[in-house]
Length: 482
Image 1 (tube, rainbow, N blue to C red):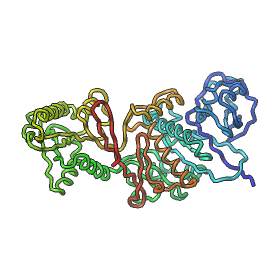
Image 2: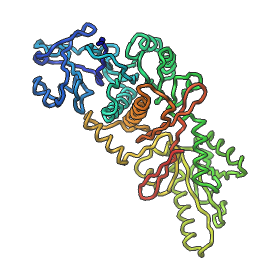
Image 3: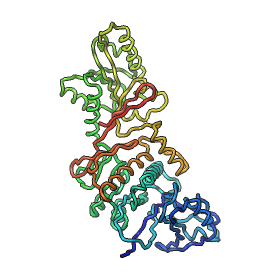
């Protein structure tokens, strides 16, 4: 038996068109929500170039209306073209955008089947004359998501990716969208925007449909504690502190922590330092506090018994670049001094050693500061692994440029990679569970920038994976998951 099924063809970009329209196409048409479209169903063995010749269009024109085909076409792909854009009459104004322009619905006769789907609800700002940085980052996330979807296409036949632009939608409008949009009502997972009210509205509406909500952009929201359908992809702060100190103690077993405290500084990491201090006191180790005024001096370190068999790990109470520059050069000189003493000491004589442990903020360092991290052999904790020169990162960056004609926006995290990793995790999970989503089977996934390992916390689920990253001399990076 055959039934009428809705197929969702992704449109990743706003189609703002002006000037003289192209000639009419020799294709059948369908009217969808009052708008007439030409449509073309890709046949087996057809290429984007061959189709472009048959239709009298350039490949770029086809991709303009069908961005999901930017990396090629496959059998049964449905290409669409608004009829109004292919008339001979000139158009003097921009084409108006629908309220949710991220997907166009085309009806066709296909065999009824269960089609797993993922919905991406983000503020793309497709109708904005001047998209904000948040809009651009959301689009980067979605572009990375599409690249991953394409890379898994052979193993994910039938998977639907649905996108909706949430820019300007109130929480009530989001609830209504999920309640009335058939595609969203059957999605296995919804990726939510980063603002708390939107997450809560989406989660409440999605719960009625048995849909999971994946929060990968908001770090602080704790809805997962009371909502069984919410996954918090960012390690919460209290869990991050625990994992970070676990990583510190594992990496530098037997070391005494030395807290660097600038009496004139921000010291914005004092909550972490307080937690660290409590953990060490619980095992009978009292951290040493070295206070300094504005800039660390070698004299501030003279109180440490550097000639004895001591092992120190320095932990600053600020993660800012400005504060890093106030102590890092002195710590490098101090480490060099200890290394020189070790070379001069008689064989078998123990001397002090010093290491450096820092913060996620440091992963954003570039230039001289990054070089100094490597020279210090520094270790940091972070939710994300930022390795811009890594082989896999460079491969995705190159694919991103090929697909979209530009580079991913530089940020921590890199949103294009975040979208790529998120899609890989979700699609692999759906594949493993016959189109259903199960947060704990399989639990873990390691991507290029993000790692996911969800455990139940409260009613929902929370990611419990943190990176411990070592910036090694010579520009190398070593990372492990804690």
